[in-house]
Image (cartoon, rainbow, N blue to C red; front, top):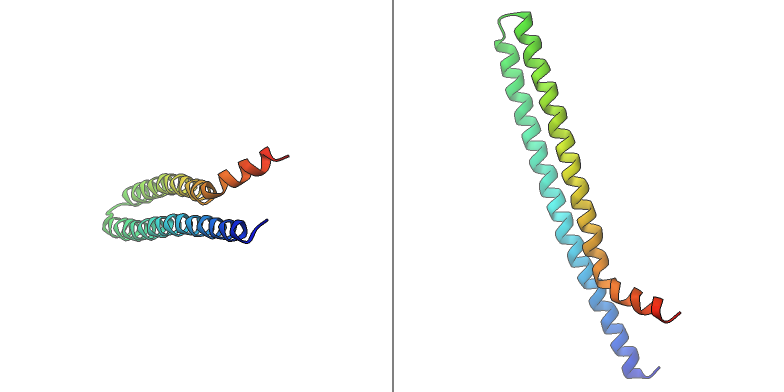
Length: 110
């Protein structure tokens, strides 16, 4: 391998690594924003439920408020877990993209 070929290979490798890192960083930021948003909504939902619970005049109403809160909290959690799962899959796909060409070349050389 000549010096020029080595330089070209080094540059291509660095470009792939930087592209992958950029994709990872972008996806990680999206995940962090999503987690912060969910946490904020969760705290707000808890505070609202607590206020409703404190305003309940009967035991039945208090149990209804608590039941509604638990149901909505569970549904929100499942939806958030699904969304985060999708974001992690996207992260993996985007971080892998720069290396697809190299891996395809390596596979065809066998």
